[in-house]
Image (cartoon, rainbow, N blue to C red; front, side, top):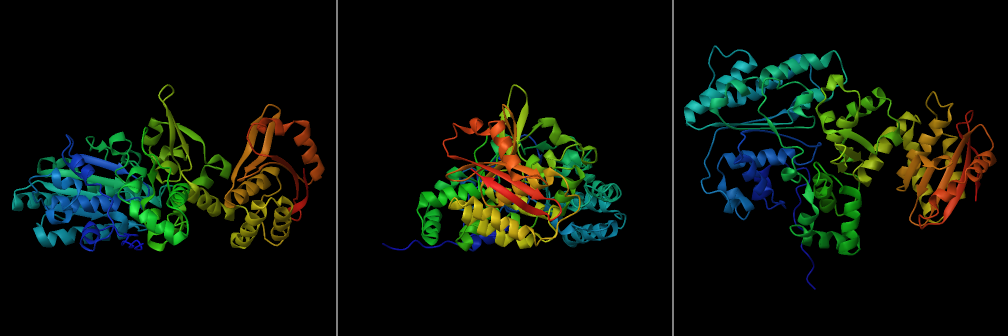
Length: 519
């Protein structure tokens, strides 16, 4: 049998022309491009998490509006488009304007404008950045006789890292608001305006005067405009999945299930098909193995800072509910971190109730769950890297049903790891167990309600359900007696797995386990 040939995968490549000219895999999204550019509204906004295909979509629009028909041969749009008109395109990628001062941001905007002024010229009277952008639009229209296309990718990038800062956010926001202000005044010269970002545009109050932007972010007809769906996996990427399965030494269906567990589970509308993270998916195919690629590519520091600001503990991140209006709350008046976590890709829509109007948000997949927990470990131990070996060895013990061995490992390692301050309360150790058990790849939950009370930690593996009660500076036998007294196992009698009771005691002085009982 002839071996399956490996294709080229666009891992981190966001330039449409390169993907098409150099024969990289391209999952066809051009039907969406046609629909977007032939709708009633000429102003559109899309928010998606970082590295989720926004830049590739924007660059695809750029190539389309330049009339580069040859790049679209064999794609869906080829049978839809008949004119292929070339328009002047002003494309601004704001990802290069991160972590800048007011002066640095103004210099970066000056550089971007200058690149187009070399093409369309500049009037002496155009001094401020808004005047220069307006002049560019007017001259591009006059010189070509065609409506101007404005593409702004990651419009909010200059502001993301200062969203929690009362001093810097208003200053940088005013710069960006001034820059974007001509978009309304120049309406008669514009063919199409498309903006992408992570945060919804209304939250940052940048486009307060531009009230005709159509937000397609939660529109069901555009739910899969970025990312890769199950159907696309099984059709356009079927041969690639077979190749990956051979590389991993498994079956095609098993490879699909592993990919689904790690990278699937996103929904940006309801109803919506399941959407895979495209960055992680292409990385997995490119490297021939499943690992944490999206989360490993960088966790924005502002998210961890916002977790601290809103005092969100690990087990409170998932299973959150919110109304549609919550996504519109201006950033400086936000009272809940939920919308920000959703927009950043750490939570996604899992259900919606038409009766209550509430969305249920949860962590999308294993990659994000484990990555989040790992990023939170520094809040519990000062040298979290020392727990990596512990997690691996504990995972092996628990896989083979050796909870005693796992707890002995935890006791030994935790006794050598310096702890953070403020650890003299039971909840700290409960949260730390939740983090460690989640990093093991097991399902873990805390404060699980039963008819008689709440179980500190419930952990489910492939073949066992563990009920774990935590005590601080008390005997482990007391934890076991509480499990028995409140009849916690009865709550899980129908789970289909054998139930193991575990009473654990922590010593606040030594910052490690002092004892445990397993039944």
